[in-house]
Length: 252
Image (cartoon, rainbow, N blue to C red; front, side, top):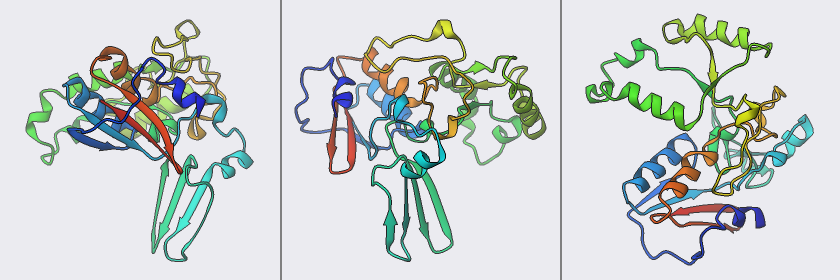
């Protein structure tokens, strides 16, 4: 609980906010970007996140710890096991299975942060609004800058493998160097001015999918949400608190 309050220690007023202009559910790539952009426009945003805030040392690093960080629910059998705020959530109903991440940062906490441009053939699909095309590259560049995508160093043995996968599957968008939203540069490892957790350099431990234990991954809790508070401090108030098993992040 103390770690969560540290995240918003720069704010004096943690009182209840009477009203909001809009509500955003989730803090992953969709929710965090929406909340950030709306708040930048001066709109009062209430962002709900079921999960808690995860620090590097909190993420599981072996099979046993991964199992203890998972929750499985079966609607048909009416049974469930695991903590309600477990990092990995698996829900089963009939012939459907849904797996999701539960934490401040959503799915960005437990993926590899792959940053690949949208294939041209996908952008030309008539189902996309034509108005989107003119700003597509600008938006991609903005996301890449915010998530600080970086090329995998040549000394990483998996760099060539990942580049070959990208070339075979989506060759038209394959870049000369494969990029991830992960910090590979030791000189760029730094602490954010907002007091958020320190960014470290990737050690190639291979734990991207279970959460980076070294704080080298640029998940959305380290950029979109933090930047919104930092740049527009007069528009935002952030309140983190537990209500049973849920963590709510409020932005005003």
